[in-house]
Image (tube, rainbow, N blue to C red; front, side, top):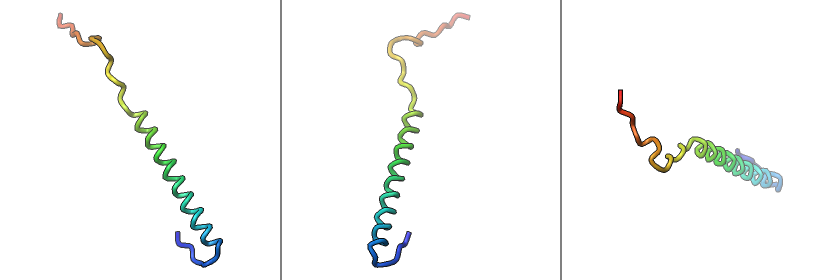
Length: 57
């Protein structure tokens, strides 16, 4: 976004634009982290449960 001018209003708009872009990036980063955490596989159960295989037919 290119805002031309020497007024304080143009400068304020540039600052606000940068703040909004930063806020958007933070929100997107949080959303990505939530997706990654939700997609993480569950840890393997501890102990010998499931370690035995019945081989009798």
